Amino acid sequence: MNKVSSKFHVVAFLLALAMVIPLSGCNTLASAIARSRVTTSQSDVRDHHVQVISDPPGARIEVNNDYVGEAPLTIKMRGLNGRVAEAYIVRALPVEYGWVQTKLFQHWEYIESDSIPKRIFFDMLLKPRADIEVDIRQPR
Figure 1: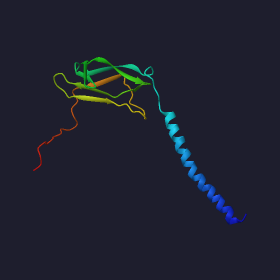
Figure 2 (figure 1 turned 135 degrees about the horizontal axis):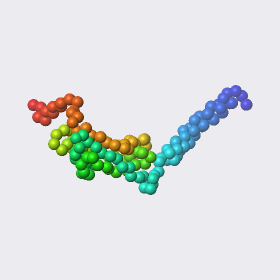
Figure 3 (figure 1 turned 60 degrees about the horizontal axis):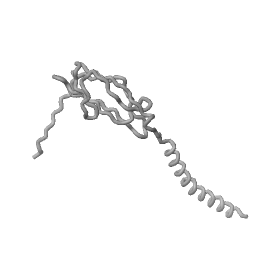
Figure 4 (figure 1 turned 180 degrees about the vertical axis):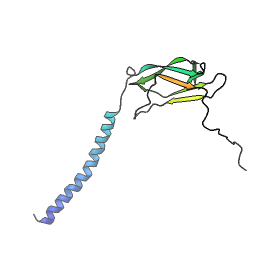
C-alpha cells in the first residue's frame, strides 16, 4: 500500500468517526438529561409552616391572591428539601396606613427553587425608594 492510499484511508476513517460521534453524543446527552431530571412523588413534597409578621401588627395577608388572615399568623408552603414546590406570592396590605408589600417565592423546574423561609416580615411603614409619576395621557 502506498503513502497516498494509506493517508486516504486514515482521512476517510476520521471523517466517518467524526460523523458518528456527534450522533451518539446527542443520544447520550438526551439520555443524561432525562436521567438527571428530578422525579418527585406527592409523598416527597411536604408542608412547611412559615410565620408571617408585620409591623404594625394586623396587616391583611394574602397568599396567591387568597385572603388568609391578619398578621401575625402561620401559613403553609409546600416544598421539597427546603425549597418551594410551587410559586407563592405573599402580599401584605396595611390596615390604616403604610404601603402594600409583596414577596415572591419562585419554583423552577431545572434549577434550584427559592428557599422556604422560617419567617416572613413586612415593615408596613417602609416607603418606596422614589416617588414615581405616571402620565397616562395620550401623546399628541
